[in-house]
Length: 259
Length: 247
Image (tube, rainbow over all chains, first blue to last red; front, side, top):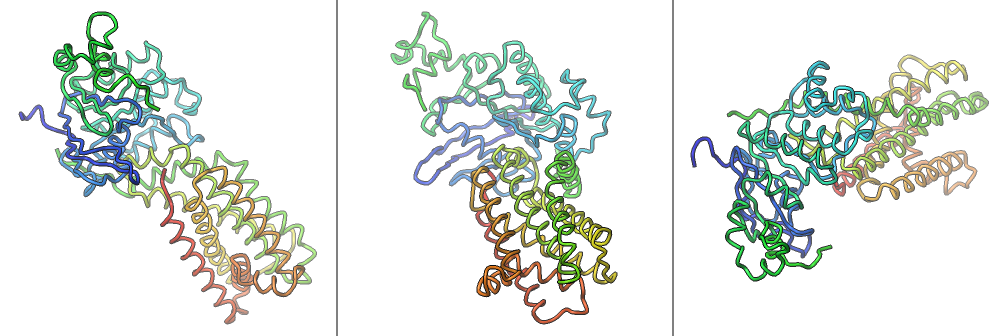
């Protein structure tokens, strides 16, 4: 591995269980610097459990997770200091306004921000007039922009985005993709989960498809399509003659709707 | 690249600023929490001659502590846990104890403000005057008593996950403590209940604060009340932390 492309996130043989139910079974993958890596899977496949273990929100039953060389199990604060997280549904204290939320999280990451610096961040995300608004008063797209600015406030080497574009209109989604690509351009690594195959194809350099707690495929979107275009299961679900990533995904994970 | 984790002082200062801002923006509920003990002290003015000023002050403070510990602290923790506020904080490089410590410090500040308000109302309205040492020891006893109700709140929010159930449970416990505590302490509910109330969390805190307000009367029973307060706080606190789930 060259200096420019080193693994920022290493997940090795990760296993997560809830009682007798094994949600994640010996999952392994790595995300390199300057890479956008997508984690795809149907509902209940184990994406959120994998992400929660990486975020340090739950303790896995087995395996190792290293962020920038620090184990999330043994050195959680060092690992967390190197990562920024945007959760699926972000909630802040309802009484705080946007500027106060940004200052809170800057402080949590050890950065004291002056009001002028907070204003600068708000201008960056076109929310210069919204500093005094409560988070709940913002639109979905504006909330996502604030969440993203908070998750990258300390310039982390790894950014985790859990379904960042869910519920956004096409304009907001495109804008968010640009911001995600800007993170990559700085040489940082991005791990995102999504249900949108269009998004995965548009922004991800590599993707892993996870189902029933196992990684069943991992490669670039183009390579995955090329490798599976002749699979009978993929051809059976192909709708318009040309095999897409969605066809590959459904072909590999099945047509059945997951609860 | 060398990784620096943020200093605890920086994290605490950010959390405290946010938690105090939240408290300030919740002035309405804060006023309600403070109003009940103040009203009690004013309405018990007639009892000052009969039972003594320290009895009235300690009664007001005890009820204020129950309000803060059960209604203020517990419900805010249950609500923020349910909404995922803690989850968002915990994905940062923050030790879990700093999050809870900041919340508890805000409640202790509320307890201090409530105690000073009761002293002021007792003095201005009920004309209760204590010695400077009485005010000082009473103040510290109030903070100690507050620890008991905060740990009881921690136990409730540790055992019950649903915020609506936490809310209804705290209201029920609050009502039982106030009604049974006050009436039982007066002897209205009989001698057995009176004896039980005296060693309940309500009774020991009330007795400890009442005696601390006139330190020259401190006796063995007050020491037992102090030890019982510490014991209840430790048991409730340990169980509350043991069973607490962050999400």
